[in-house]
Length: 393
Image 1 (cartoon, rainbow, N blue to C red):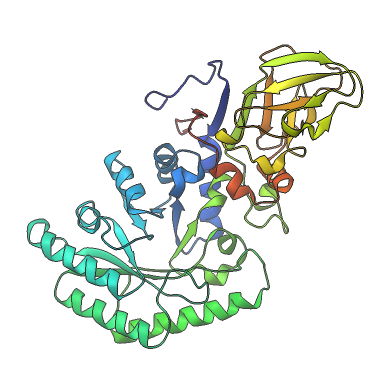
Image 2: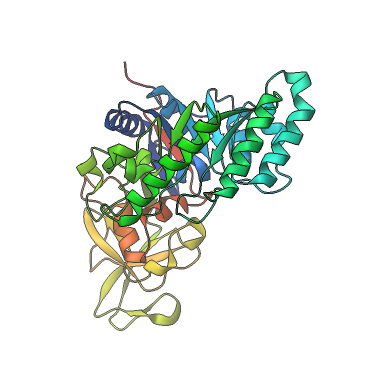
């Protein structure tokens, strides 16, 4: 068990059970799909809501050779927890903790001259003492239009300045990378366009003398469906947690993945009400006849999407139910149709689905969003309970 984690059998208002054996199995599947590349397990946003430190350790145990975070603070927290190995972080703002990142031996992403100038200045302050140059990866904007340096003159300027800093012993250019816009839509014309542009920008940098350890562009959907994009490293995020990044073409099982999180709560109240009884704020649901109502003690403060009011699925007593009326901050109601489960009965909001329970994708459909958001938004009021922490064998 992780320190201060609740017991897997403790009675709780709500719990997010995290199956680390499933996570390890997912990592092994992803490694097998990209046998010629290293695997980065992305653990940003507290491992997509699953818990960064336990998930990072489990991913490394299963063969992930890199970990990835968005913010440097996330990466530094992993280091503070004693997580070893290569960790890359890519979402920087001016004045960011460059020096701390260098001293923590992180790989930092640079998308433009301002960032290169700041990390170089930080390296000038630290290199004499640490004798270690900053590890820098240059990001290319090949068509996503977010972070990354534009092709052409901007890229040439960044590459040239980075090489000069490397010759001065201030940085080591460890990677060249980019990110897909539409990898979850197989056949989208932007995929080939981005791959071609990435190859061109890598070729230019290498022609100028850059010798990267890794070149990478593949995210979860590209890891699963675009083998020509694998290069030296693939970055798997949502797929590590057993959720399909492309549900239109296949669910988790179709890719050999298993969802890692099961979200459940204890039914807090069961009561009889007459027909015509309004339920929750605004009375958007009125009971069609005499029935029983069950109160589930989680709400949008716990990350349950209010947009799923009236549509979100829950399994109670082996039956699928639907949220009746609006989801409130701390609770929602289901119409039990006359059934009378005892107070404390488990209400499963989502899980792997193999017991007939809803999945995160079912909630995504109900809320008009993606499953990434469903798991990532589960809040800190919901304890994470880790199972299968010890690796078998």
